[in-house]
Length: 86
Image (cartoon, rainbow, N blue to C red; front, side, top):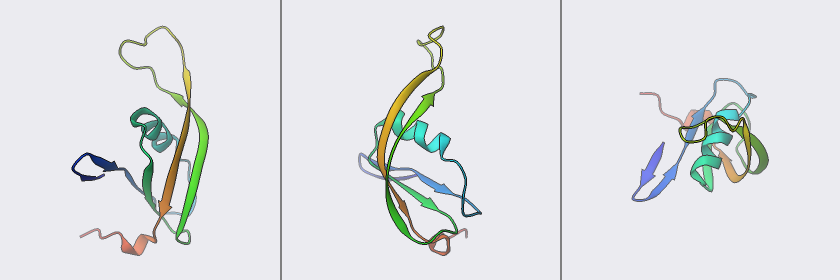
Protein backbone atom coordinates (compact mmCIF):
# COMPACT_ATOMS: atom_id res chain seq x y z
CA UNK A 1 0.00 0.00 0.00
CA UNK A 2 1.22 3.49 -0.82
CA UNK A 3 0.30 6.44 1.34
CA UNK A 4 0.93 10.14 0.82
CA UNK A 5 -0.65 12.21 3.56
CA UNK A 6 -4.34 11.19 3.35
CA UNK A 7 -4.12 9.49 -0.10
CA UNK A 8 -4.02 5.67 0.02
CA UNK A 9 -3.37 3.49 -3.04
CA UNK A 10 -3.57 -0.30 -2.58
CA UNK A 11 -1.05 -2.43 -4.47
CA UNK A 12 -1.58 -6.00 -5.63
CA UNK A 13 1.25 -8.13 -7.06
CA UNK A 14 0.41 -11.33 -8.96
CA UNK A 15 2.91 -13.79 -10.44
CA UNK A 16 0.72 -14.71 -13.41
CA UNK A 17 -1.28 -12.84 -16.00
CA UNK A 18 -4.79 -13.55 -14.71
CA UNK A 19 -6.50 -14.00 -11.38
CA UNK A 20 -9.57 -12.77 -9.53
CA UNK A 21 -9.64 -9.40 -7.81
CA UNK A 22 -12.20 -10.33 -5.15
CA UNK A 23 -10.31 -9.03 -2.11
CA UNK A 24 -9.20 -5.89 -3.96
CA UNK A 25 -12.81 -5.17 -5.01
CA UNK A 26 -13.95 -5.60 -1.40
CA UNK A 27 -11.20 -3.32 -0.09
CA UNK A 28 -11.91 -0.64 -2.70
CA UNK A 29 -15.66 -0.74 -1.97
CA UNK A 30 -15.15 -0.63 1.79
CA UNK A 31 -12.68 2.28 1.71
CA UNK A 32 -14.32 4.08 -1.25
CA UNK A 33 -10.95 4.59 -2.96
CA UNK A 34 -10.54 5.75 -6.56
CA UNK A 35 -7.23 4.16 -7.70
CA UNK A 36 -5.34 0.90 -7.25
CA UNK A 37 -2.13 -0.62 -8.66
CA UNK A 38 -1.78 -4.19 -9.88
CA UNK A 39 1.61 -5.53 -10.95
CA UNK A 40 1.37 -8.68 -13.10
CA UNK A 41 2.54 -10.17 -16.42
CA UNK A 42 -0.08 -8.36 -18.54
CA UNK A 43 0.76 -5.42 -20.78
CA UNK A 44 0.70 -2.01 -19.03
CA UNK A 45 -2.85 -0.67 -18.82
CA UNK A 46 -5.36 1.52 -17.04
CA UNK A 47 -8.84 0.03 -16.67
CA UNK A 48 -12.02 1.45 -15.24
CA UNK A 49 -13.47 -1.22 -12.96
CA UNK A 50 -17.23 -1.24 -12.35
CA UNK A 51 -18.61 -4.33 -10.63
CA UNK A 52 -20.55 -5.62 -7.65
CA UNK A 53 -18.89 -7.54 -4.86
CA UNK A 54 -20.06 -9.47 -1.84
CA UNK A 55 -18.96 -7.79 1.38
CA UNK A 56 -17.90 -9.99 4.29
CA UNK A 57 -19.84 -9.74 7.54
CA UNK A 58 -18.36 -7.14 9.84
CA UNK A 59 -18.88 -6.33 13.48
CA UNK A 60 -22.24 -4.66 13.91
CA UNK A 61 -23.67 -6.28 10.77
CA UNK A 62 -24.03 -9.83 12.11
CA UNK A 63 -27.18 -11.68 11.17
CA UNK A 64 -27.92 -9.57 8.11
CA UNK A 65 -26.42 -12.07 5.70
CA UNK A 66 -24.20 -11.24 2.77
CA UNK A 67 -24.43 -7.70 1.48
CA UNK A 68 -23.42 -6.64 -2.00
CA UNK A 69 -21.74 -3.36 -2.85
CA UNK A 70 -21.11 -1.62 -6.14
CA UNK A 71 -17.48 -0.72 -6.63
CA UNK A 72 -16.02 1.65 -9.21
CA UNK A 73 -12.33 2.59 -9.49
CA UNK A 74 -9.35 2.87 -11.84
CA UNK A 75 -6.95 -0.08 -11.91
CA UNK A 76 -3.46 0.91 -13.07
CA UNK A 77 -1.41 -2.01 -14.38
CA UNK A 78 2.30 -1.17 -14.62
CA UNK A 79 4.64 -3.99 -15.74
CA UNK A 80 5.83 -6.31 -13.00
CA UNK A 81 9.50 -5.54 -13.66
CA UNK A 82 8.90 -2.06 -12.19
CA UNK A 83 8.07 -3.70 -8.86
CA UNK A 84 11.30 -3.95 -6.84
CA UNK A 85 11.44 -6.99 -4.55
CA UNK A 86 14.77 -6.07 -2.89
